[in-house]
Image (tube, rainbow, N blue to C red):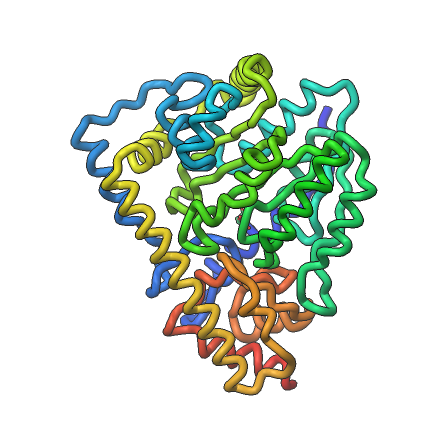
Length: 401
Ligand code: LMR
């Protein structure tokens, strides 16, 4: 029965974490998976999350099922957060939402819904490079996926002209995956003007914007700023749009798998219908979503004091990332690492895209115990005052050899 099964190599980024954990070298550095670490290199329990957890425990936590669509207070608060109170009030009844297994689950639900609503599967345009799971999610559902050039490796910068020309030629009615902010892995986002142009080109060809919003709050520490592109498409352009939100990173709730899929529809009726379809699709996939993360997120988003604490927590994280990015840059420059490192400080968010060749990445891993993704993406969060110089020195030594 299963003789046809192929061997699939382990997921590269999870395999890298496993390799790092097995390494017994005391000065090892993990710049692999995108997970926030504090100044001591430890996972950070956000004070807002800690407070919400305590409150839940005091209130008495049970382990009952959530509704199929998820916790309604969470869904509503997540939608309001994404759109901002004004736009939310205007559009509330044209929105469908469904709690999801973090961002990946939201992307998957979006794919299932698109599949269930179209006679012919639309093309999915995916930036190159992108988060490693985008292709898998849409390939596994049978969508024809096509990469488009997002980054110019020579200039180490965004290739906005290639982006525009792809949009001008894209097959009408296709889906385009958009990183809402803090593009993974390049750390480079379109400017506001460029977002406007992207939105106009997409509207002209009736392309469906599907946002992956996994790093809201990580660019600027300010969620409203980071939600700019999402609101532009929905408010100014009045387009149908899907948003796949994850609270893994910005609430540090990685393992709780808490996210939401939001669909901004054109009409009330479509919103009712798409929401009912999401309910059916969710039921057949996971029956109903996990409760704990939803209860924490709902409390934080719904209570002013906790929300203010969370805003401060996001600022703490994004601010430390900014400092560490600068510290790495300063160390590389002062140690005389060959080449220019300006690209590193042009980027923002969780990641730095160093532009190192694969042999250097391997040497850094094997000789210096500095772990980064094969494409030389680093999670800036893995840097701290205690290791940043070591990392810069290791890179410099590899490049000078
Ligand atoms: C990453 O890109 O490192 C993270 O989003 C973790 C993951 O699931 O790949």
